[in-house]
Length: 333
Ligand code: UFG
Image (cartoon, rainbow, N blue to C red; front, side, top):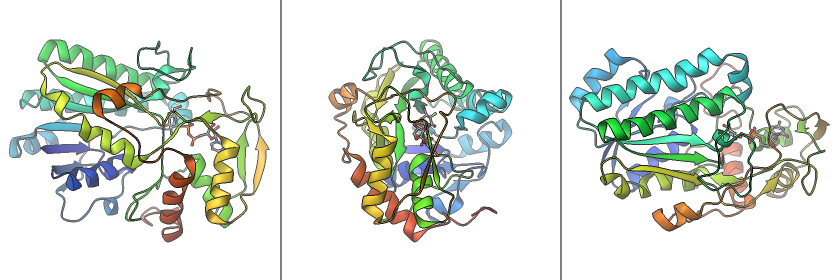
């Protein structure tokens, strides 16, 4: 398959690009490099530094290629920022993909894979989270992802678009060969912050709340390896052959892991102590989020290779040790 990967230089997108190549497909990457890293994409892969909302720039790209499918990873994903600057989030996460979808449909491309999120569920009414539980996002980030899910449903009916929307739980880890990994600026995610604190490159890790109704009082999340997430994107290709297919999958390991357990895993893997301070709860953090991924297992034969936090952190640590400042292409790197 010839696949346009929007956001292919970002964390999850770049891992997916490598999996596509490994599976014999032909990715073409589009990324405006606001958050993505050019070095995350191998030089031999066709790369276009354009924005997915830039219709005049997309036109020649679609005219020059016969894409079989488009994957879209290029969203902003800072929950707190989405609360303070919703316009930025609606522009990038809703308006821009609207342009991408409009352009691809105009050029006869009718298969789409979308990075959605467990944040579309808000505070879950039941755990583990199955696909058809009510979706009630509690922040604009989650809402923008749900808006795109709804747009995709409408396009499936109006244009015969076939799509898969993957609701990721907590993407974590790095490529097993250590070639690419996680590098966000600013970094807000637990695992890289804990590793940076352990190495003394970052301040002590603040634990956001120890008074949650969970076994050790800290939040429970479902950490899923970024390469496992990527594999699901390829496993779904066959099902997208049906015109108008509307596919939703929750992607997690199903294992709830607390903040304290993640810290322990980082200490075990690194052999270093993670300095911590206990802080207040962070606004918008549900106490527990973990997936029931039975649907992906049954329909896509998707079984995560990394089933627990230790091996996931090992891959993250390998990358982090070799690249303590990430790709080194940002002023704060
Ligand atoms: N945490 C801390 N201290 C930190 C950072 C995080 O205690 O310095 C805690 C959080 O409170 C949370 C857990 O660690 O309980 C994981 O936090 P992350 O920020 O790593 O990840 P989130 O669960 O907040 O976010 C993930 C995705 C988002 C997505 C969200 C949906 O990264 O893109 O899930 O809930 F929106």
